Image (cartoon, rainbow over all chains, first blue to last red; front, side, top):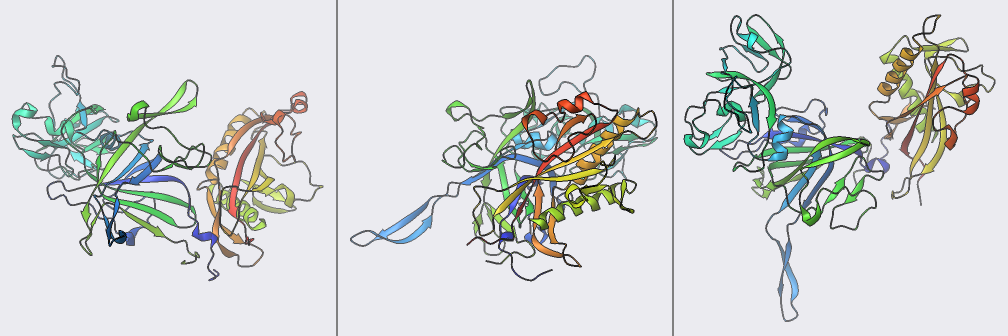
Amino acid sequence: MSTTPVRAAMVPVTRQIRAYFAPVNRTSETPTVFDPCSGMFSLDAPPRPWLDLGWVENFERWYNTPTDVVRSGVKGQPAAQFRGPLDARVEFTFVEWGKLQMALACGSEHMNVLAPISGGTAAPSGGTPKPGVAVLPGSTASELILGAGAGSAFAPGSLLAVDVDYQQQTGYVGSGIAAAYVSSAAAVMQDPNYVRRVTFNVGRVVEVTATSLLLGQPLLGGAPTNGASAQAVVAFVDREGGSFFQEWSALFVAEEETGGRVCFYYPRLSPNPGQGSSGAIWNANSTSALGKGSSGAGFAGTLKSTTGSGGRFAREDFAEIARPLSAISLRASFLALPSADLNDGQMVVCYRSYFPAGMAAAY
Amino acid sequence: MQFAKDSFFLELQQRLASLNQARTVTVNGTTVPAVLVVENLPPSSAEPQPNTFYIEWGAADVVGGHSGNSPLMSVDVVISYYSFGSVPSMVDRGRLLAQLDDELLNICQPPNAGKRDYTQSPSVDLGTNVFWNQPSFTEGKGAGLYWGKTSFPERMKSGVTDAAESYQDARVERKARLTIYFFSEVTLS
């Protein structure tokens, strides 16, 4: 390799943005740290506990933190600057649908529709479910031990939710990842299945053995806790409304086609759809890719409208394949919450990392 | 520009060798992975061989809207191939063409490769990548009458010329088009 710095290698070129999320400990409000030391990871194998949510489109991030000026003297000369209230947002479109993608796009409690019992009471987010099957000790995040014959309640290919029974506890519920906040047992009708209705501990059965279920992907919350049960899931539901706010750490990576890699790390993101947008948009379907948001007079032909008339937020995007076929994607919008930097205690809402290409000039 | 063309061609050839070792072609007595560049072959070469990817270079341009001291360039690429199938009755020619389609799509991933100077041995990393868009496939059929063309007139968008339709044989053909991008070695003043 030549050691001569290459200025062309200083131009990061990307075609798409990949999203990774990791849970925030809601009790302590501790985010998952992304250490740039591990920034050049394989995009298909992110460092734990980051979860790959796939490529996203129409990636847009912006901040609205005002910088004000202190003036002094007879002529009011600028004497100093200070930053006003922190305000930063990020918006994008999930191309793929799944439990996590829906929960993040919705932002409130995300419901697993448990397989119903015959003759049960109907409900929009899932009616009376079949009873859970107890998960036995020795189970792992990828294999659920149920005992001889018990696995017959689940067919290969079926989805299931694994978590503890609701037993009058209050506060955050959901093993491994806070899935909802319960203020009182009465608020959730003392439903013993409530935790499994909202838990992120879901998986798909790929094989049923004599005593266990093998899952295609490990449970997000890790190995089932003592007292956990499994229930079949037939669908996912999110709702407009609810009082709970999801909160996650997020990492966005601009895959490098040439030049260096650029990463955006948000320690704490909370869904906040409905606000206006004005940032730079990455639109992979555009011919010139980079554009400006609704308030910018930027590059032509790249703006993809995500707000309807009156600034209303479009929950879904429809990408036309060929009339009348369209792919439906999930539009997500987040408010960046602050976190204290571990090195100097500064309150920060976002980090931008750049990993120069091998022969790129340093400046 | 030649560095980018060489890098793209050799990357595809190496990826095909890894993907399907049996997909080879013999040229002048030498067996190589079945990716060839038409302009590297003698003009008097015989008709293209079946089950082989032929790369042809098209128009080159400087990509507008990009500023920097190295121009970002593009070159259109056409990759042509055809098949008679693998059995005397040729009834599997469509399946074999589909397999070739898959192989081409596969070796185009990831859609970038390091740009290297292959005029030296060992080759030298030039510090940037060649990258390209996803190939678009067009159907072809007939006697291969449009081999060697690198322009894309409207009447050939379907991949089928009038003459080819008139003289069809049993082959099934495909043309895949894509554009490669790279930073030129020329420094703008």
